[in-house]
Amino acid sequence: MTTTTTLADLAATSLNAVRILERHGLDYCCGGKQPFDQACAAKGLRAEEVLSEIERAKVSGDAGRDWQTAPLGELAHHILTTHHEYLKLELPALGKRMDKVHAVHGPKDPQTLNRMAEVYAGLREELEMHLHKEEVILFPFIEQYGRAEAQGQPMPFVPFGSIANPIAVMEREHVSAGDALSELRNLTNNYELPPFACSTVQALYQGLQALEADLHVHIHLENNILFPRAIALEKR
Image (cartoon, rainbow, N blue to C red; front, side, top):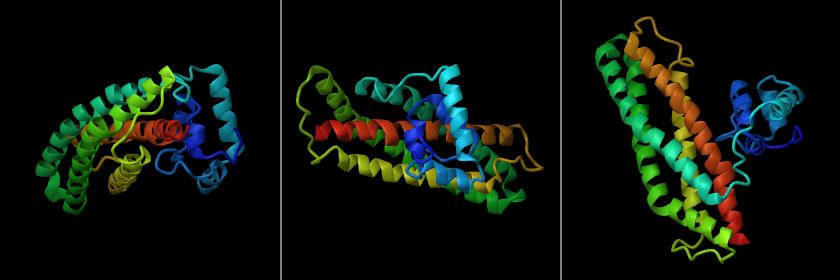
């Protein structure tokens, strides 16, 4: 690793790297193609110090599963059972909290809460359709690619020309989801609780922050590891 490595490449080295980048506010997810040194400079950080922190964590801590070398099917299964299942449970629960907060507190800050409800509704609708497309169209083929690789067989035929075509669609939708998450964070001033905050407002803000953190890891695993590996296999 060097300071000119991209954020995505750095994040792909370990879960510890992901956590450190998150702590410093470095977007390894949708902004992952940005050079690490440039991203640090934009945040007023010393790239060498952050890199050293990641290296120390790699030596001393549990780096977690190495998804760069794990079987492709195992990574796809992990995303489905960890991140997809999380969203299927959390999106409706957050929707109910958002509706309650909007109904009870809407008149106290209509500009912010009306827009929050609107952005969240759009994000939820897009993510639920996104999960469906991945599970029905893309992931079954990626899992077939993983089996073919393990068995030393040719890659299976895909009816959409190339695995890169649906991947490109998924990546565009990831950018859209990232934009919605950024807007929610900006609307709430980095999830600073308003004066009228009750327990439901607190639960909503905490839930939205947790959703953002999970989606960052989720999108990272797909954009920076799963998808490039699948495309590379197809070109093999």
